[in-house]
Length: 123
Image (cartoon, rainbow, N blue to C red):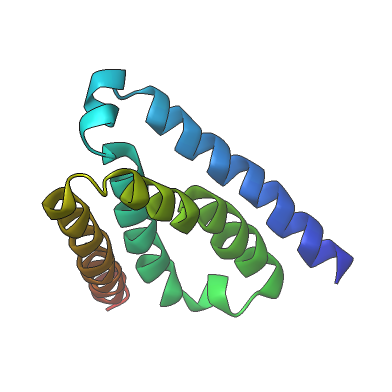
């Protein structure tokens, strides 16, 4: 149990560091107008989780799953930032609704795309 906790924790450090690095790569003026970095990491994370979810070598190994999926990808994606950024957009309700739709529908579609890509590569 401790091993899995440590693996997930170390993975989360990597994932959240990557998320922060991506947010730093966006100009501040762009971030103020729309939360592009959070949308990007959540869509990319959804794709990667979908891609890895059909990888039996990864998903059947509890340690690998704890590190990569729970840790790295869990630390990389962020629901809390999505929630706060949506609240911050309350004065622009159409943008907030668009952001939520892009995140949730896009996240589902990106995860499905990841599953399809991996499934095709396994044939």
